[in-house]
Amino acid sequence: MRKYLEVIKILFKTQITYRFDVAMTVLFTFTRILFAYVLWGAIFDQREVINGFTFPMMLSYYIFSSFLSQIEMSDGVSGEIAGRIQAGTFSKYMIIPLNTQGYFIAQTFGAMAFYFIFILPVTILWMAVLQLGFTITGSFSVILVTILMVLLGLLFMIQLNYFLGILAFKFQEISIFLMIKGNLVAFITGTLVPLHFLPQDLVSVLRFFPFYYVTYLPSMLLIGKNEEEAFTGLVVLSVWLAVFTLLNHFAYNKLRVIYDGVGI
Amino acid sequence: MIIQTTNLTKTYRLFEKEAGLQGSIKSLFHRKYTYKTALSDFNLSVSEGEFIGLIGPNGAGKTTLVKMLTGIIAPTSGDLSVLGYYPNKLENTFKKQYAVVMGQKSQLFFELSAGDTFLLFKELYGISNEEYKKNLDYFIHLFGVETLLNVQVRTLSLGERMKMELIVALLHNPKVLFLDEPTIGLDAIAQRQIRSFLKEVNETRGTTILLTSHYMEDIKSLCKRCIVVNRGMKIYDGSTEAMFDRYQTHKKITLSFTEETAIELPQNCVPVEQNPLKSIFMVPLDISQEIIYKLMKEYSLSDISIEEDEIGSVVERIYNEGQVKR
Image: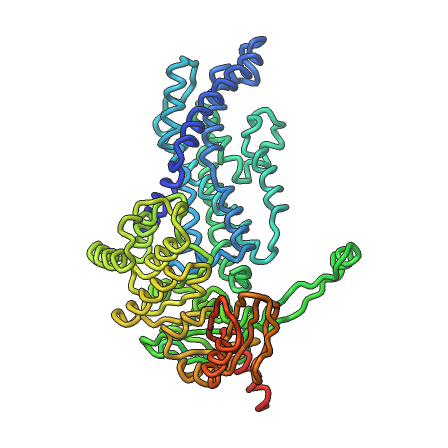
């Protein structure tokens, strides 16, 4: 476990190397909140409630889902794996005594740690300073379930991106897979528009897929909505996570033997 | 034996496409592949504590061999055992017993200091605090890099970075160290430092070292045993000294003249480059002194340099001799 912790630490250290980057990221947290405030403020100017959402609810939803999509940094996993396989430098991970899947999970959590340590407190601070109306569930158990769901969701996304990355052993060029995944995820996770606004039949289908529970449901739970879906969410996510963990284990062992390490 | 290979063979499948637009469209519908044997029926036995040089021209199969010995790639056929393990199984217990340094690839985190990477590797290899401190002190003093430990890797010179790469690789006391062109691109001073460092590690720690290099000096000063690979086949395996005695048969002489000169090369000399102000040629080793003396007497020289035969020429002679025997 200590070795994974050290991977988390080293990735976190790389995130805070450049002061200007850190300062700008923190600053943009403020602008994001401000833009959301202005945008949704204009929309809610005419009506008090849209589709069951009040202005503070919508703003809170946006802030939660935006934060969750920011900490979901697994995109880098598929890019890095594919890039290194293509360049012949993936061997870097094959020669160290560490499970490759575990390394990438730890690496992503290391990058994520930056957002928990810097962005979360700053977001809370700005909201307090700007005195924005804010809605959050009062149920401690819902918050705990949400944290667990977020964790499972992040792990699933890392596994998905790991799977797409190691496909480069076979296909070399995987940008088409990444593009499909990117579009799908942006839509299904509800980052663009709350899924609540979509036709209910479509939303029912989406509930069988893990993306629904990565950003959308945790954000809804935090503003006190959809609590009845929490348990189903944990089950669906756990099943998908288990499937992809096994799939990755077998796919990696099968595909890595065709690796030629060309480029070294 | 610490390393043992029998009939080790690696064949790569290469995608082939005719040049031009027509070729690109054709290859959309009909894929064409060729097969290239990078290493063929390669037999190798290495004992503990040996320092072996692996030489050969580009594309000879040296790096392919190192990649198979470290488990990075799987062989196409043949048997392979390193420290009793089949490398491509990638077992952690195996990985903890060897290290590999590739001249142009890095394990260091460029944004951070080398010290940060050392801490990561301490945990990855489960090195105890005492051993880590002892090894780190030993290596940083040996290399004289005490003041560079906390400097961002990105700002280090190539030579300094290579020293750090070697320290990362050796922190866990590996039994076998694979080095693929560790001195490539380094200046003469850095090359010499790295050579003396490797010599000390081999002699005092008993680390088995397999070194691939294009530099004659690396092989001559470090490796008692040398293996020559050409076109995927082993064409020499034996004493380095004997190999150079037998196959390093020429010296390369460069003469620079004070004024335009038409030089008449003595018999047995092979011209490499000739112009009125400069003449480069190869001279047989046994008559080199006599010829140099004669040329210095006969011509007005502004400079003269005498170099040893390049590794490439030595390999070529071994290869040609093998062809003739066949």
